[in-house]
Every structure is written in C-alpha cells, then in structure tokens.
Amino acid sequence: MPPEPRKGRGAVTNLQGRYEVDQREAFDDGWQQLPGEEEGGAPALRTQVFEERAKSILTRNQSPDIPFSVSLNPYRGCEHGCIYCFARPTHSYLGLSPGLDFESRIYAKVNAPELLTRELSKPAYEPEPIALGVNTDAWQPVDRDLRLTRGVIEVLAERQHPFAAITKSSLIERDLDLLVPMAQRQQFMAAITITTLDADIARTLEPRAATPSRRLRTIRTLAQAGIPVGVSIAPVIPFVTEPDMERVLEACAEAGATSASYIVLRLPWEVAPLFRQWLAAHFPQRADRVMSRVRDMRGGKDYDASFSQRMKGTGLWADLLKQRFQQAVKRLGLDARPQGILDMSAFVGAKVAREKPQLDLF
Image 1 (cartoon, one colour):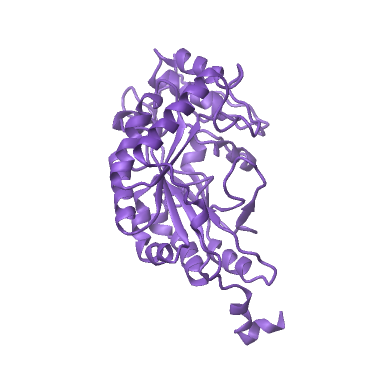
Image 2: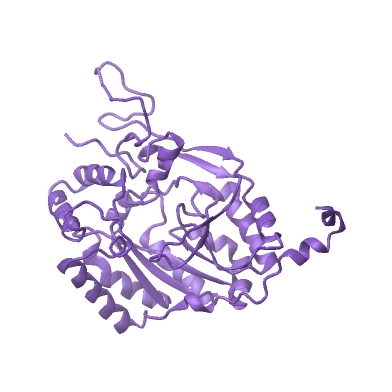
C-alpha cells in the first residue's frame, strides 16, 4: 500500500537522506493512536524554525544553464512543501530528511541582512545581479514573522544593488514600498512560478504555497505597480501539469506578465523516490505513465544532471514540449527578455563604509 498523504504537506514520508548512517523503519503495532492523528489519517506535523547564524550569505555558481551567478537564500528548507523541489536533497547535508524534514524543519539565517551589508561593503566587491529565493522561497510563510527577506531587501535598496526574485508567495506584495522604487530605477524584476491552474492538483503538489488564482493576482499587482514580472512554469510534469501549460501562459499574459520560461521536471538524488511516493499516493493510476514519459525525456533514467539536458530534457517529447512553449509565448507576446534591464551604475558600495570614521581602522 502507498504511504498515506499528510494534509498540508507535500512529501508523504521522511525518506532517509543519503548521508544518514542509522536505518529507520516505521512500525505500527496497532495499539495507540498518535497525538493529533485523525482516524484513518497521518498525524499532524508542525513546522519547527531554528535560528542559524550563517558564516556567509552569497552563493556563487558557474553553471552555463543558469541565468545568474550569485544567489541569496535567507532560509534552509521551505514550508511550501513542493514535492518536486530540486533543493530537497540539501537537507541531507544537515543530517535530516529531504522529505518531511525539508518542509517542516526550517533554518532561518537570522544574520542574513548583517552578512549582506558586510559583503557589499568590501572594497573589492564587484556588483552583479543577485537572485533572491532560488533554493528556498524567500517569502515562505515563516517570513511573515521573521521578516528576514524584508531586511535583506532593505540593504539592497539602501545600496541600490540590483536583484531579481522568484517566488510562489503573495507575501511579496508586503514589500512593494521597497520594490517599486527599485523597479523604477531598473534595479528589480520578479518572476512568479505557476505550475498549474488546477487548485486541486496544486493543493497536493505545492501545499503551502499561494493558490494559482492568488499567484495570478500577485502578477497583476506587481505589473500594475510597474514591476517587470515574468512567469516560470517549473516544473512541467507530464500528464499532471503539462496539459495545462498553454492555459497557464494565457492567464499570466492576461494578468500582465511580459516574459516566460519553463523547466522540465527534475528528479535529482532523493527527489526521485519522494516524487514516486507522491505519485503513488495521489495519482496511482497514471504513475507508471508519468514516470515512463519522464524517462523518455531523460535518456531512459529518472534524471540526467548534465548541463545540456537537465533543464529541458532530450528526445521527441522534449522537442514537442519546446515547440508548444515557443509557439505559445510568441502568440501571447511573452517572449521578452528582461534579464538585460538591471542597471548596475548606481550601486553604492565601499564608499559608504569610508564615510564612517570608525571603520577606517579596519
């Protein structure tokens, strides 16, 4: 029997991370109902937030298929619980599960604004666009109280440092007072991820993210405020979200999006078994069909990590998907390329530190 899904959670198990030494196996002797467990259902799982004082805050990469080289993530783990999240395996480095732990044990980098200020004040720092919220959603639910993301944006706004953000959360609207002036100076642009317009699918696929209709409203709000906003259809899941692709693009264009991108489902490391568990729990009748199509686009494997293939896949079905996407964005006018509009010229860096005499000693 497939594992029972948990209400409000994407993963259905706490699959062991690849670095864990001890082996665990769940066993129910049938004698006791766990606290918070409803009859016939899995026990409730509360989110725990742990404070972390990070040593660094900017992450750099040289991946040829990623349109940015610097990123910032105020959190580890993400409460949105998207079952397909490629960042899930990062929780294995903490000795935790990429499954339920990833979405219920969140690590908050409480010194993120402080670290960013220090980084931008280095005399040798060379500004380039920062991508906010890549391995974790910067506006996930815990940020309503912690406000770490707002603190980071305040630093970026003060230094007039350009950045781009991607999110599934309507909480980004909270920070419009900072984002709008930056967009007016060509220092900010946004992307909203929408995988499907089907609220029932979204409820299990990305259980604690904003609903698809709410995300469309966020696109409209950002666009009307003058912020360049695109849509990211990521991931495209065959026979689950893939049939919805053109409808998503049409709805986003109508809401005011000016650009679009897509990524085919990626299943690195522990994401593959977690996703197969999710399919078995929610789409058992089409699970084999979905995985067969995924393998068709991944050279017969669940995943191919090579730079030339990991984002779009290969083969007949990947080519057909690419053609569908290209035709739709051209028809809808979503083929703009906003990546080149961010203006670096106003960045205020080390000279701010020199204006403070006490820092001259260092």
